[in-house]
Image (cartoon, rainbow, N blue to C red):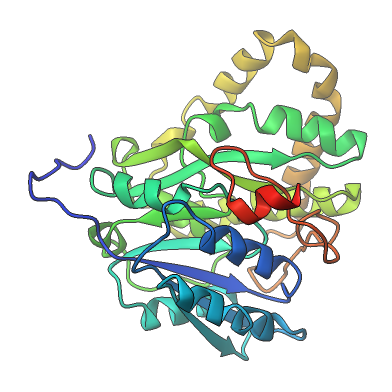
Length: 318
């Protein structure tokens, strides 16, 4: 069940933590989607942690400090010269001034009302995330995988934290520091019952899947490896939502004939992901499979519009 909402409940201050590694092209787009929220995110704090970068990620973030200050957003840029996403997340947490947190990947875009909707939802829930909007790749394998994956119950009906998740102040107190693991979003979700979570159906986070088939398979393998790692290292954290998940997916496919032509390609990606997770089961977060061919992470260019409350600057660029 969700938290009981006190008659005197007020919006918590929110700190956005972005762990970014070599994201000089995608990070400005991500920050732009945050700064162009409607209504303006008054009192918002954004902490960018440049994690062992070899490019101009930190400079790209600092270049937007003036724009952030003009609308009352405190943009802090921290450079960490030791690799590891968990170190970057913990560094951002240590610098945060607000109890409620949102953890955002540097290669996603938020729809225009995400921040306001998340802060409002945190009055009643401990863990919230917008619905996922997938920018499908151009390859047939990628399109097939995206078509099935985005319609699966695992994505449609629960908080998967893919690119954005926010936790209340009391929710954040349920764990100490982030461990050195691959899937921080899975680790966080396992601390909350289903009734303590909410998907923001009116808002969305835009995720760009890899355009190259090889990268897609490697990234899927990393996701599978991360889930296996969490369940192996933290057996006391029971993910009740996984019960019957595959059965629900099969049922969805049987009821959706339009997806049948995508099943062979999607099935190949799912199976290869499982096999790669087994092949690299002893490898931790230090092996990082990147999706350099994704549309958001690729060379500079116009931002991609996000449905569900489009930020004004993004709308002007369409």
